[in-house]
Length: 431
Picture 1 (cartoon, one colour):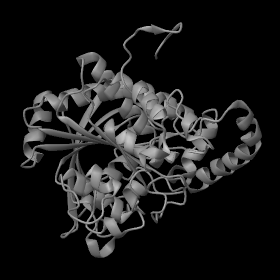
Picture 2 (cartoon, rainbow, N blue to C red):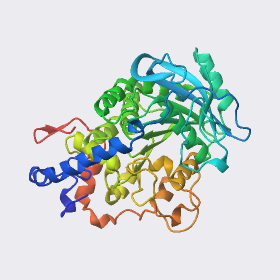
Picture 3 (cartoon, rainbow, N blue to C red):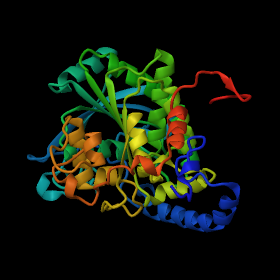
Picture 4 (tube, helix red, strand yellow):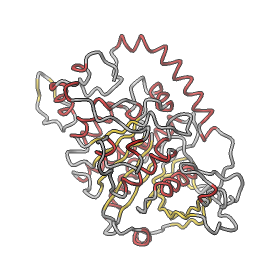
């Protein structure tokens, strides 16, 4: 939050990066050069631009004896593919398709936490690579309910994962399998995969595809919450999927008058959400919101490029929210800054999944565990913590003292994150 006067920075819920017109003119040419460079890096380094084996979802001839297995339910708005090794394309389908998918993950001796060992051939080698063992269509609601009963844990927990920009169907399936395996969670995993083409220069197409899929994700959330075999729902959304998840929760709240109580936690990892749009989404979800945890990083090059593509407005996941963390905490939003966490991703955009300590931290949160004792950190307060998290580079200082932000500014922020009374004041109705 770059400002020389913290008393004036929160007008209209201005999270970081809301510059005045003169400031934007001064920095536009500098930012454009950086953003263009980021776009080039994005293309060169993103999975969708790299040369790799595709159509990898063909089952291997023989499964590895000591490989791990992750069973997930996959809901998608993608168009089916005629290729058995692809299953679904990046184009938009006309219906929601449901499949149960079993993924084989190589033995621990052949992999590192946080990595997806992409197949080097078709069919994959399950001894060293991720592989899909079987895919079964869920042709009826009864079959979906049977999947819940078969895969539920003792706490009847469900994890819904919404992937981000530039992901194929296989990308999303393998990523969720990796998260489940490396986090150690036994919550029943559900993937919602929307029509991303998996290409770096299809950003705008992907954004419209996320928009196209809002109602489908709303329906999935409601169906899961209504199931008697589900008691606790956590939504984990990454990047552009964070915008989709927030939109879907807003839609659920407007349809049902409130978000179901079973939806207790929402984790937005590097959310590619316009800072002003998030304010509206948050308000329109109503007062009975789930707890939100936001993983941010000021070193996220992908979100820097997104900011440029989106007219220079900051993205929630690329902003330093720590100075406002204490205020956000009062409103049910917690912040973890992962800027200092080592990551294998050159763009700094996939820390939530490829950093061993962060992915384990997510597993602890899903299990309802927190750190006990020691100096408090934001991770403690979120309830997202791994055994060694307190001493790691990801450690975050407790939010800035209340005195840093004026009482008036605090009230402005809290007021603007609270539903409007609809009354006109000085010729204006709060929005």
